Length: 63
Ligand SMILES: [Zn+2]
Image: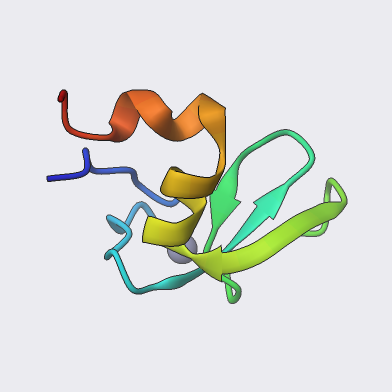
């Protein structure tokens, strides 16, 4: 089970299949919560982000 991450704006936990935005500070937001403070780096599902980027790998279950 991937560890829970809250959206910094609405504080709702991301679901695996939620579409999320990653900014250049490596913060995840819901598309509706994204504040355009930093440039957009990627848009994908929460699960895809966690699997794609090394800095999220500590959220993955231990093998
Ligand atoms: Zn949000």
